[in-house]
Image (cartoon, rainbow, N blue to C red; front, side, top):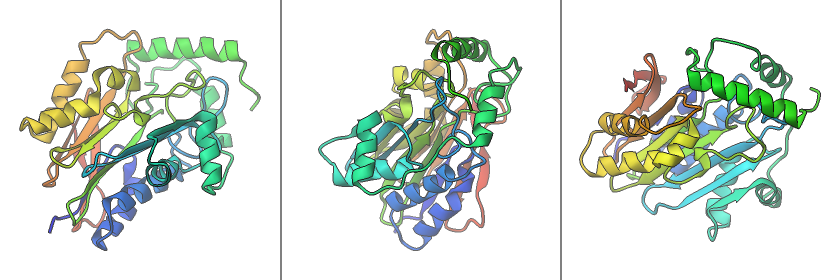
Length: 315
């Protein structure tokens, strides 16, 4: 019998205990990932996922989420979803109730959520609106919101965002995707991702979180990986799939994550900023990498009383 493990990116520690409770009781990795991410999406103090997520350049909150099962490589996602606070559950519903499709976006994703009976909610909270306005002011902090200094790419992105906001006239009124990877007692491996995407993004922009092989990838033969941060870079480098391919060649999780980041670091990108990745194998090994010192990921096993923060390798 496999020993259950659940890991997640920064800020996933809000949901990991609920996910591990499922795994300890013999529940599925699919349930554990969904429940863990729902806790994160419902955390009003987190402004990068779910309710309270920072809005796009027009002032609208658009959410992306995906989920992938390692044994079958079944994948489902929703993107640019408005008005539904738990996109990870809508993505799972696509997986189970609409298996002829893998990705629904915008109005179609909302229509499907309504047909499934999901409850609508106002996603733009007063605090998120305030942060959205303040973050457009000149600052030395990174756009990402992980308490890091701004890079030249952050500055260029904020300037481009200001131009978008002015042009789109938003109405009156720290991006950071969350990843969760889980291994259950039966040996099943599942990856899930949820985000409100880059703040101030162009309406309809979809990042790597809803794209298989970019924001997440899960293959029970080798492992699972998921990315946070600069989604456009991850899409160009098919970041999560690249990590899993390195696992397939025998690399350990930390080294595979570091190698992927080193590869995409060579790509030209005027808006370059932080990209991070973590990985989990079918035998329970795990690791992560980032481009900045002090970056961590969260871990729980069946023996854990609470999430343990582990350092990511710095590339």
